[in-house]
Image (cartoon, rainbow, N blue to C red; front, side, top):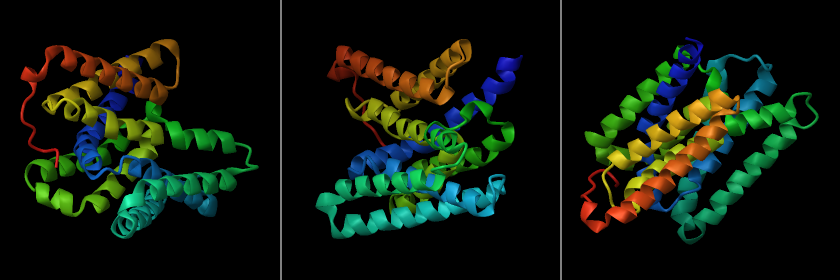
Length: 257
């Protein structure tokens, strides 16, 4: 029963993150801004830590998320400006945003008794300790992104940076930077590389979460790290299988861009 009480909210959270991140992942790959989520996630984490520093480590969760979203919006605004003014060098500038935010975060927690633990939390998250209350907001976001994807795809493209900032921020607070990046990129690649159905994307994400969570629970390992490795292995397996199936298995994709 304990594995259901702890593991089920995590699995549901993973499915909701996949539901909101896979459509955004298609947009990221199409736009050629692969590292934007790492940069924005790091900026959002910086906002969360700064808010906790200013208002105490037990600060209100809504305040922390609000500060994270504000920082993320500033980050995507900067990325949008870079994309407009320096499109040829955008990946380089996005990388600098990530490094700058990460370095400022290190400086903020330097000398604190639990500074190292705080840094680890921003990278790997505490997904194993999520509750059903944490799932509710992610559920609304997932439904919203799916509606945009299938009903109003032009609005998803038009307001991509805004939607991306809010979605990534809420996920980072719960799952950490590494897991958010993998959920955004790896499942989308499972469909795009060999032009397969989106079913491959959701399949890779689901299998990765289930196996990673099972291994983490069984061997008492960090859940987010296990899921990250598992999703990547699921992606490699899927691409290998697609290659064996050959081009005749390819189907037309409808929501990549």
